[in-house]
Amino acid sequence: MQSDDPITILIALFSLLVSIAVAYTSNFIKANLKISLGRNIIFFPTYLTDSTGNRKIVGLGFNLPITFYNWSPQGGTIQRIRLVVGRKDNDNFYDMAWTTFVKIESAGNFKDENLAQPIPVQARSSVNKIVRFDWSPELGVK
Image (cartoon, rainbow, N blue to C red; front, side):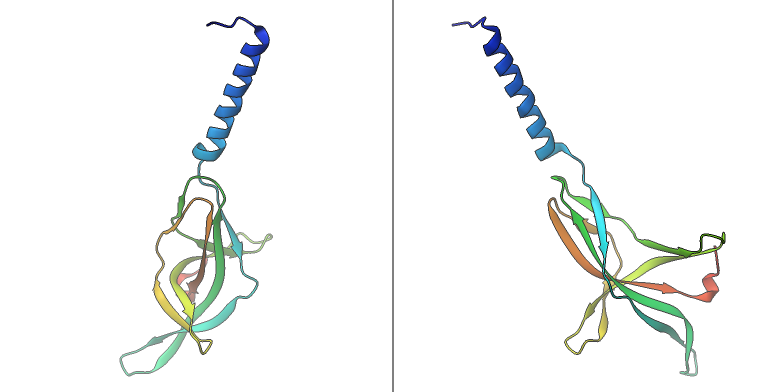
């Protein structure tokens, strides 16, 4: 049985286009990773211990809570995070990279969880991390 009715053919073509659009939006859109920064940043001095056992302040560190989210149907990976601090009227800036992930202990202290490494974010999900950044004057200005 063959139908040559133009309305039937139009409905079939429209259904095909809708099916293709739904398949694309539900399965083939690439990961769209975004971040949401926490409201609180915890600053602290970073120390090095010399051969005599004395601790010396060598820089500044801070912990920043970050949520990575991905509402697309494909998963993705956060490869690295860098924080650049500068002023609009000055070409110098400070470039800081993540160093570790930290967690909050029951007493409210921060403890290193593990080294900063790529973070997989699955499809339609989010990942929460507290990321530690370190800066030292020895790194200089870029």
